[in-house]
Length: 71
Image 1 (cartoon, one colour):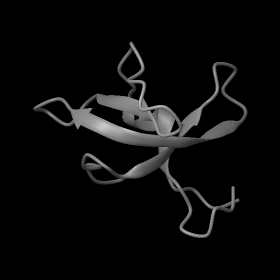
Image 2 (cartoon, rainbow, N blue to C red; image 1 turned 120 degrees about the vertical axis):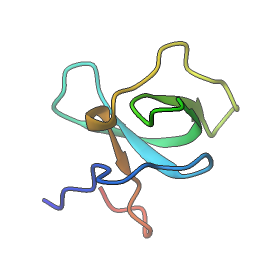
Image 3 (tube, helix red, strand yellow; image 1 turned 30 degrees about the horizontal axis):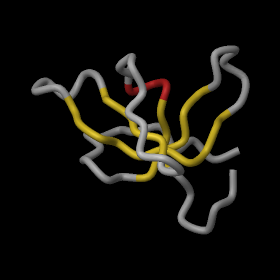
């Protein structure tokens, strides 16, 4: 499996997958809404309805969505 976790800062609007609460699967359909000034945590928005998730994410809990939609 390809590792698409960020090695550089992801900018707002970047489509990402979010690691599930159990840490074993990835959920698609999200994008970066904002990044803190240190690039340490990401604010994420659900693409389907524009809802911004209430908790920030560490970089290891996100990975860039594959361009062709593959997991």
